Image (cartoon, rainbow, N blue to C red):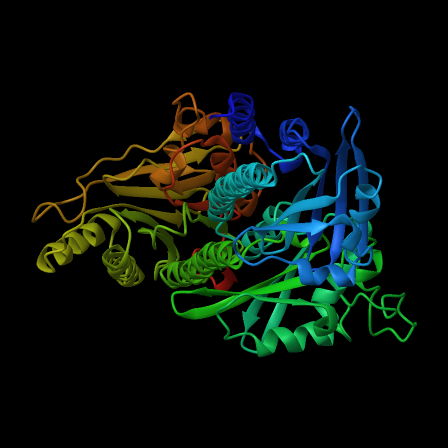
Length: 613
């Protein structure tokens, strides 16, 4: 005959188990139905950690609505023999035969009229086990009681397994979210040290209580960053990362190991993380900081070390410091995934740094390292790389002294970026420089460059403008300008007015046999000629307006300043103005200082001044 009362109770128990977040939440749904079983006078359950550590005991007696709960963490060595295997075990034991040394339930059972203790011991997880038992008298159907105990235990084990599984899934989801956020944060910077600092900040406190990040250099590990949840320990952790010989030796030994290693207890003896009497203030000999473990008040310190390896090479290491329960330590798989992502971000930053230096170095070799200077003109230049990550740009400039005492200014822009653009940049600049040094007029120099480009079958076109400044006996200078599709130079007059030099001409490298016409005008003392590439004028604000629209006003505001200030100021203003656009900016500025009337106009002795970049 089916026991409808127990069946209903068991059904309710399964429903409660599906919703429970803690096994203890099932207590009322387990104890009350068992206590309602005929012949049962007491229900008692225990929870054990390891074979012999009793965590708590809960008992409910017939006729009582309030359970007796004993929370403890005491060791019961004799209870180790009760530890079950993988399968639940149901046992009948006379109450009189229970030994208090191994059965903490015995005292409660002796207070009941029952003569037999029917108990089921079962394993919940690898860390411990539990028992659920009842005290029964002679009227009880012991076989039925055993069946009900076994069914209740099945529900408890299933509930505990479900809670663990849901916890793992929740933690896995949280880990995945953290890894995704970590990747976004670390990938958002291409600065090596900033990337390393972000690794440490992301991990604390979500992963660990403290983190140390080292970069692997040829001479060994180099400390970069540290962080800790406790502000007072931040400095101590930084000193450990920077100076502690124990940690330095450990990192050096593990530089090639791929697996994450956890160290705790005796493995940390002699280290600044040891949970021993050594965790005291430094003794004043100057070779150590206060150990981090000195502040750990409840949990033993654990550290983990993960090697940061990317693309087959080690780039550094990350050391996590934990002062939390074992259950809250991250898994090795998670740490490996975090280390892999961190390593790739760091390696990308390192590669970017190398590429950036290579691009800037190549760019510098395509530009003059020095500009000529005399008392007749004030020359300066500015070059701002739009985005070093892209590649070397095609902007160039130069200032060339000529045999007749004049000076030739040239600026140009090769279409595109990269090695081919760099090669064409070098060809264009050196061709124009050679021709202008020989006294060739600007129009002829551009025509001959165009012919050379066509003969070389150059696949890219370029724009350029050449301007010569020739002193005149009246203290003025003749400005002769010739352009090949390049933005028109501007002239800032000494009175603050700004005018555009008339230019025209076809792009270089497009058609054969192109001639270029020159435009002439006079400039007076303190007048300034400004040549630039389109990276300056095409800097665009968020609303869509170009810097070109305000360039004359911004230039007029610089009246009275020397060439260096004008060049640098316009470059920085264009950078601050633009919300989009990553083209390089090149400027060449020449301020005519004038010569006294009747002065000797033969070529002046020239000096060289290093150009600004």
